[in-house]
Image (cartoon, rainbow, N blue to C red; front, side, top):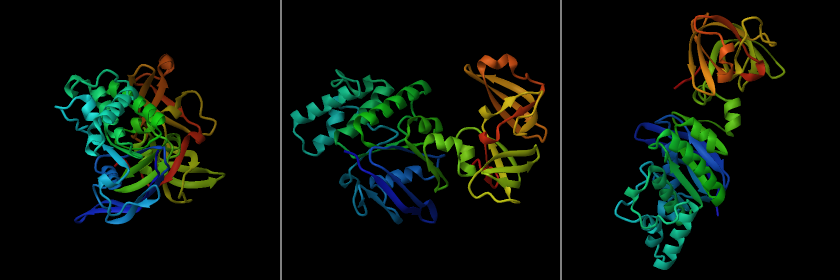
Length: 363
């Protein structure tokens, strides 16, 4: 079974420091939900409030529609996987997985059967007698997950569990985690500062900054339609053009910027005459020194360097106003790309850009 989780105006204060302020969101049962943000933004504090290790100083946490106030971690239908994994080094893999069941008084035969079933689920059949020190990092990660699942939680809480693994193993394990969540149907709430993890695994993502919830959306919507300057700057890479909104209509906005007049989709809270920033993804830009874009969006810049990364290359240029410009181009088209030292026009479609009120926020 899985349960929904709801935070209703939840806040947490440590002395004079406000770690989390007025956060509200609902995670339906069976969803893979990630909380994404930089270090110190309050995401782990939220996870610990859901788990019962911390009591909110304001608001409430509900699991399955039930208020969790006053209930400790052992009284909640949750299990938590910590960054350190915290496997018992002197216990076998099987005994590690069965530890929570033993603590609940489950008999030895049932514990063994449950642990063996979970070993099969995590593709570690035959590893029950091994010690944690004999396993790879990815295998230990799977054992920690199996130990959490053994007590049949309705909500599994994961606090940056992949951060200690190398890149290739992280990429492999995030696919395994997603597949495991789909097989079990348990509600997953996953904490990470790695945007690629959050975008690759999640049904929805909540973005946090300085204790404030910035946006909750699907990975696709978060990337294509950031709601705040912080989300635009933190999730993926963006080129930012600051200016004044001079025209609005039919969901579009025109800005007068130091790079010229540029048009994009009008984001929330935009007003004519106000300062705003137009955000354009590197892959939305294309180099064409001979013509302007059909929407009139073109920026002149001089190429400074090319970073070849296999399937694509990142072109780093300098705009005429002195600001940097980053353009992503397919690796197969590298020969057609302006080379370092060359000046070119870089065009983009208005539908591939979004204008948001205020200045860029890269905190």
